[in-house]
Image 1: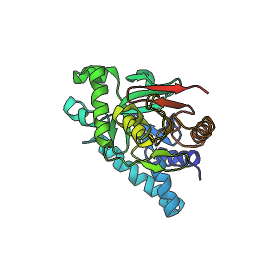
Image 2 (image 1 turned 90 degrees about the vertical axis):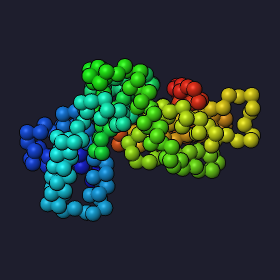
Image 3 (image 1 turned 90 degrees about the horizontal axis):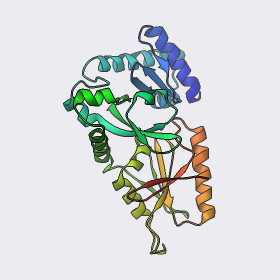
Image 4 (image 1 turned 135 degrees about the vertical axis):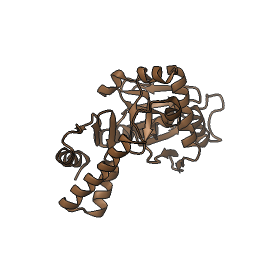
Length: 268
């Protein structure tokens, strides 16, 4: 069962067990929404495939899982905290497709033509977009929210493993599974680390240190040296585009040139 079919199956179960909660299909593949909360289903699908649930077992697993999630939302784990003290440690920066309807009311800042960067409040089962009225309620500026969100994601990323494939061509992949792997490209410290890991003694010292990254989906970031031969760069760029078209939580088919200070889309 693919993610799209599984999402429809889970949605039908939820509407039967929780008819007044308003569960709906999200704008991203494999995501369901309930009010402002978003629930990703990739992990539940993997659990289903591994365990081989019967129809009755899947029905009960979905009911129990979402009953617990809803209870957490109603109690201590609110989607949008009321106070700044509650919100501050849960803020993260995220990358999302620009065509998501909910982003029209959210705090966003530019990234690329098809991808927008934004600020979200994290929870164990998803995240919610932060709106200007939330910042006002907390007494914070948009700039402050973005900086805190980056600091929090950086703290989560200090021990994040980078899978290095020596090649040729050499490349680095980040796939921690926490839902923010692509967003890590927004952090100058991570960009600098990627560039350092990919540098080689044969690199032209007169060329500014840089790397090329792809963010084909939310849960994956891949990077390679900007000084690779053109045919290898093009081959990797095609792989990124293909991956974005077939994966859940797709982001961009583009690739991006990064330095420690900047990110620039590469137009093919």
